[in-house]
Amino acid sequence: MWVWLAGGVILLLGAGLPLLRARPRVDTAGRARARMLVDRLEHALDDPGLSAADRQAGERYRLLAGGALAGAPSGAAVRRAERWAVTGLRAVGAPTE
Image 1 (tube, helix red, strand yellow):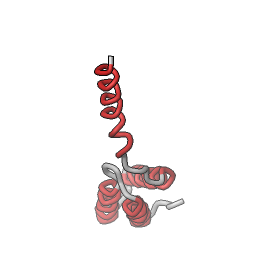
Image 2 (cartoon, rainbow, N blue to C red; image 1 turned 135 degrees about the vertical axis):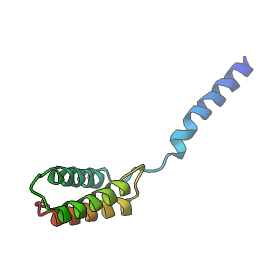
Image 3 (cartoon, rainbow, N blue to C red; image 1 turned 45 degrees about the horizontal axis):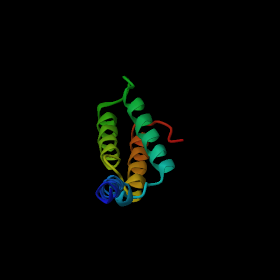
């Protein structure tokens, strides 16, 4: 009986360990805003009347912002992604708000 009880405790500890070691979540509102800005930039880049230079600048900032949001971004990475997305929107002449 004690073997089963000890085995159950060990199993529960093993299953719960990843939850205890999980990294705290980054500000989800900031991450959502950054993703929204990147989506808005992607939409602005679909404009067929965009000049090649503006499109190239917008694509560069879209890639930088998307790369900053990849994986589990830190708070600094989220702020950087927002900054790059806004810069890209300004480069293509799209509204930032």
